[in-house]
Image (cartoon, rainbow, N blue to C red; front, side, top):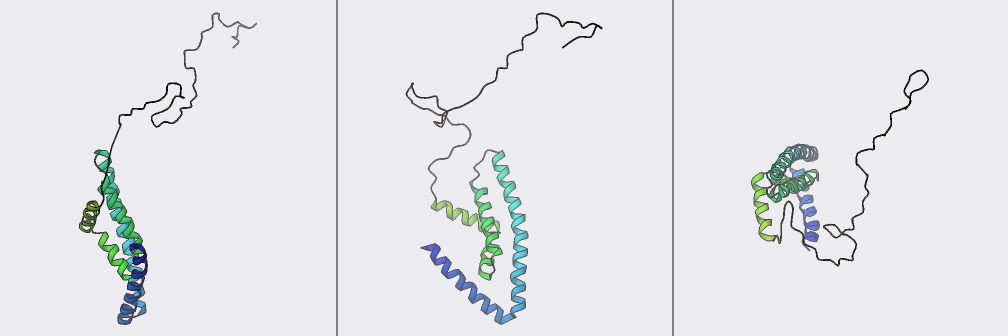
Length: 171
């Protein structure tokens, strides 16, 4: 229901803002502002996205919880989509999401509403009870199918190679 509401209300807001701004400063300046915000927004999204990717990489290297860097990256991606959408309201929301304090506030609000039931990292203990007459299974219950190659040392010949008529060794 909220999504339907947004799909109806946001275009109405954008149209009203276009009419008001266009009437105040003219069509040419209005289009120039829309184009300039798209270019500036895409440059800012690229900069903020690179920083968010570095934060995510550091989180993985430290074996920390990657939830917040992932959420910041998703919000930066969403702000990029808003900034590329023509309109003043969407540009305002997009530029606001590029500000780290706004992203932290949104993350806190989302975290209050989302409950994580479990989280694990690295190796986990796995116990499986199965019928001994079943096919062998892997950790996730998948059948393991494989091939093998004999890597034992090659056999050495018990005799030396024969010599040809002119003393050359045949192989």
